[in-house]
Image (cartoon, rainbow, N blue to C red; front, side, top):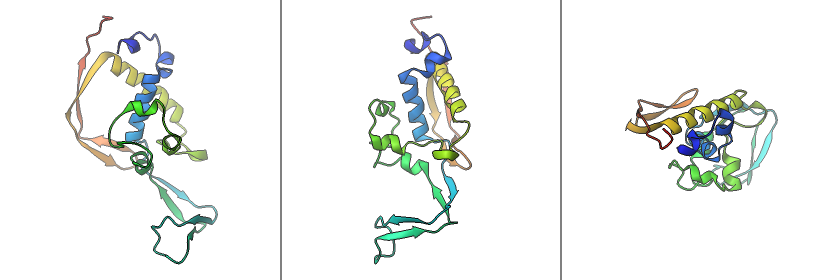
Length: 168
């Protein structure tokens, strides 16, 4: 907390490893978009994962024009990519595996990624740093996850108390 309070401006907050890990972990647990719909622009030939009902062919085709749904939430909470995926642990981003980095897509990926992503990160770094430096937060009511166009907590109640600091 005192380290963050000692930083003079938002640029320093954005470059803080600690704040970056907290923001990244928050986005991993609660991605901005819970699902992405895309129309397939060409036939996609892929290998069977064993989940197919067609046991005679090791491949299947997703036909051009099909609508597919990608669920970043499922990837971001998968134990295939993250240890204890339902636990908030910013330290997992100190030396993340390649798989963890590749699975991280809270704003989607590619040419259709969220155009407001940079602004969102700048705002998150600023707000999280300010809150971490000046307040103690306590969850009074847990609430529940609400999935719609975005993913967010519903009914959660936080108690914010001004933090005492050695720098005051």
